[in-house]
Length: 128
Image (cartoon, rainbow, N blue to C red; front, side, top):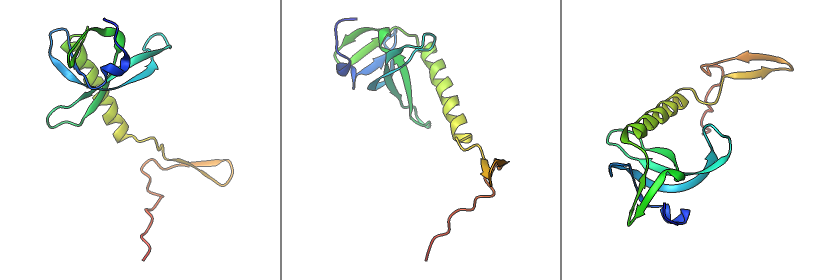
């Protein structure tokens, strides 16, 4: 990769080895690596597909091998990218189905109760 600042990568179009468009780079973030738990720079690529929700896919900035004009080429195949997109879509769907509320709440002191479907908590009524 030629010397380029990370700010210049923002708003470039990401492409794979075979010059197929992957999406648009919307920001650069430092995230923990997958195997070695050190912070690395990741390009956040916005993937827009017809009839599906938008998805942001992180790819390591180290995988960029060429930047020219409005394009940035990543050393990744389309199949690898699609696997990552599929994995992130499944995670996102699972998070929508099972929100962070586990349904556990405390009752007077140390006793606890479980209400996984949130039936015990009524919606607030609108004041008239």
